[in-house]
Length: 112
Length: 114
Image (cartoon, rainbow over all chains, first blue to last red; front, side, top):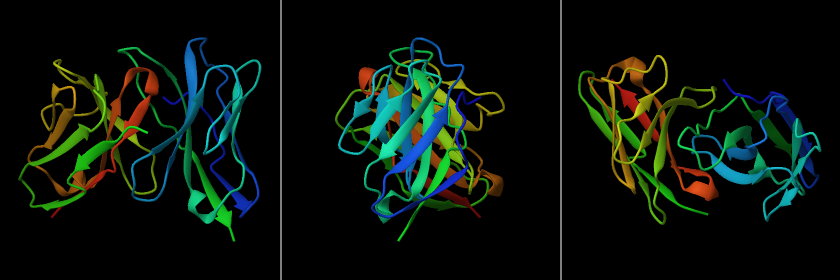
């Protein structure tokens, strides 16, 4: 079972920041938070990941709470191309027991 | 980011025939590959995990004799759907893991069994 909980859908106006929350209250100390997104009829695309510290790359920022029980993915200036299903996943890196289990994700609609 | 190529992207086959789907990591060595299936408007469901040179580990409820997985090299894994039936029609997606970099996904294969 997925160890994360996300809202089923969200809307965001084009050009605004999209903030997607994720709860992972049972996360273990060695588990990372990963975010992927899936645009219709394509394979998931990696966005960002982190362990404890906040992370930023060219696509997004990841804010992880101090207790690590929740996180927020931030798309700073959403465009219509960001319309997709966003998945938050927790996983252990570098382990032969690593499995990537998807929850239901958040369907993000960017509104023109 | 790392590139995972999946082939074919679409396939239509007749009921009772077998279909092979290839998954290749193009610019890294993948010690572990994952296979998923996805029905319309649903999330990805993990079918099996394969480590190079080992037998695949199947998730509960997935028939190992129906979905044959071979991970013969560090850059190639194949999924063969044997004796396909219409209910096997789905979107199949592979993922290849490269240690610290995480996992990267293929573009998916749309299988239609008629």
